[in-house]
Image 1 (tube, rainbow, N blue to C red):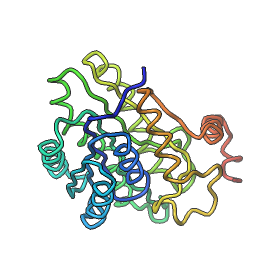
Image 2: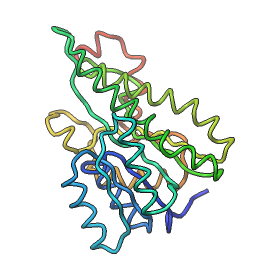
Image 3: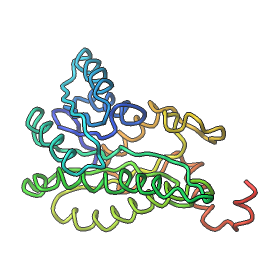
Image 4: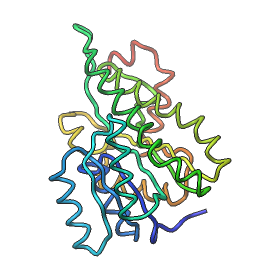
Length: 248
């Protein structure tokens, strides 16, 4: 069943750039009241201004999603402005290359703090009110990397696999309480995080990715992997021998 976003309140984390920015604009065009969360206040203010100029309703709060108290306060403040949160899109994430000589432990810790705990903290900030109302929609932006890690992205891929696993179990319990859960796994998307990537097959623009995500959210998809050629390659890659992956 497809749902309307008109007069709904949505919060997007990591809204200052990339997919999050385009998703906020797309949801606002759909008639959604949007809440923006990210670390960079200046970029949030610029985006909020653009949404208001286009006739949208928006609230913004600067916060580090890796800090539980910051994200709780930010989302509470947004809800006080635009109303109870109907949709959460936990989009904020980082992609830091993994090294083995030496192992960059601090980068791995930061990756899991933001990519995994940041999702859980955001869910924790909206879930009590959704449970009390008996409805809501929670989505997280994962990655096709969750299905097959590659050399150099071990921590990133592991963090996204953790998000998928967490939402798999959470979705089943949340559904019984009237809350939909969507796991979104994009392939390569042109964003500031991928700016230095030299090989990105079937790459999408952030605008295209956001439009696809909005359609998946409207249909309350459980898991949305896209684009399909990259999704197929990622899943086939789970069965590929190590020597083939190493030669890529």
